[in-house]
Amino acid sequence: MTIRALRSLLTAVVVCSIFGASSLHAEDGKWISLFDGKSLDGWKKVGKETSHWNVKDGVIVGSGDQSMLVTTGQTYKNFRYRAEIKINDGGNSGMYFRTKPEPGFTDGYEAQIDSTHKDPIRTGSIYGMCHVYEQHVKPDTWFDYEIEVRDDVWRGREMTRIKITVDGNELYEYLDFDKTFGAGHFAFQQHDPGSIVQIRKVEVMPLAD
Image: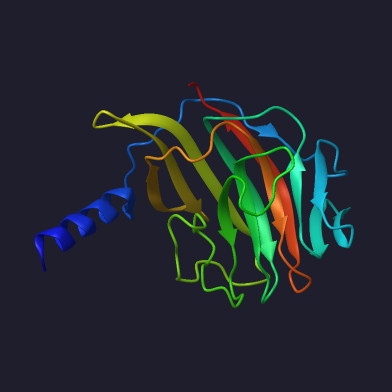
């Protein structure tokens, strides 16, 4: 291995590393519910009219063509964010954070939701930044998705820390030195007509700056 290749490898390990303990710690705080279990109050659809978002038996259900379901309330920068989610076999979705009020698919960080879709980038990935190819969640199965985000400084360099946890298993902490997205909204993606995503218990815990 050349010195240049070794440096590249070490950089990759620092930026997208998988380990048990994290240097990102949340302060004590209160969880705030973003879904009342009955309606889509506080959310709006952005995208094709042939995309559908409904509430059935206390669950948000996304189906049909491409769109985003985005929060209409305040924006968040540093936070913990969690939801209970289920994706169908062959389905694809995304859990967005720090996104725009009317986002497209590339606006904001996307925590991928994908168990068996033809796109091999699976649940647990930050799409386009840190990819997971192992299946951590079976299709048609409820799972807990939690994200922790904070703007921070590492060795004198400003960056955004993003910790990804699936069903209580911390997968990794990603360090975004580009600080790609600032404070923003939350959203869920309806990817394609073959995808059905279901969501319940959506909560955020703001963290101090």
